[in-house]
Image 1: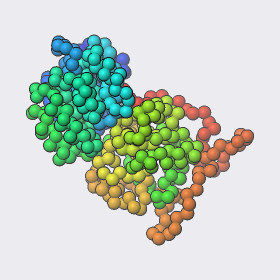
Image 2: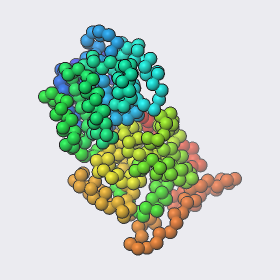
Image 3: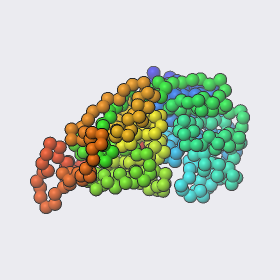
Image 4: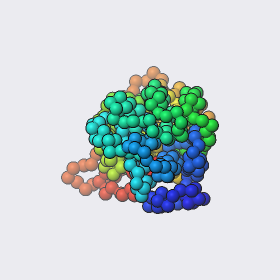
Length: 425
């Protein structure tokens, strides 16, 4: 079924064609006609399924077909993170490039005045994080009384991040008569309660099993002592010749420390987390996209919303305390038809966390012990972790390092066509 069969305008079809898309994804095929018809939606979809286009395309068409009566925004997309807000707004602009509609993106961590100026000119659609949106509302720089369509994107993560009260404050600023679209990768009692209070006779769309992981993601767990995790990670990156890997830690401090350790092992790396400035996070993402950063180390909150095209590897350096976060983490790979691998480095103290994840997924994650990194017997004293010396380039010589897995750092970096942050969500 081609996009042309979904009832979209020629200008939108032209923009879709310019992006190289021919056939809609399952969620796009189901959601676009429903949104065009004015119905509410409750959509269960993993990231990477094309959900941004599923709501952006029909919203753009609806806004274009309705007369403007002022400068107030008529559509609002709420997202949990700055990165996701920026990417959604970029996608909306890409799809709407041939329509005379204006958009704005609003999030914290950057100056508010450019956003004020953008809103003063007048916009049709706003993509925002809840906190900064409420700042604008409190200062009177945005008027939400004309919102016709509301999108809650990645609603489950917004609840996980404690945004429920902010969401309720935003809802009080909106007209009661509006169209509502709610997207969530996982489900909980809180999500069902939120949906019940917002949606009116919604169409339920589910393109992935509840709390499931992408079928194209190969999952594997490596048992290893906690003190040797960094050593094993460096070994895997070097031995496998990985050029792009997203690594998850539990804490901001842990992300910084691991990024520094990987750099000492000869692996270009960067960390992103909530304490990093927005400009630093943007630089890290751009470096990762362009291949200058080989390993991007992230916390769960910072990585939520990262849409990285054809990302081959995700590593859980530390398992998450909340099993649902595992689903979100490994959903960064195996996206839009591309295969990926998700590896978890599991120390003995994390066995319960692994069991909780497997219980949620209703499946076993295969365990594979790497030779030379076997966990020590209980009670044994672990040695100090060794630096990964054999990966270091030797100065003033052309001799290649010896060993079964020589480091390829001296070789020219291969191009990675297609890798990068996707525009089409």
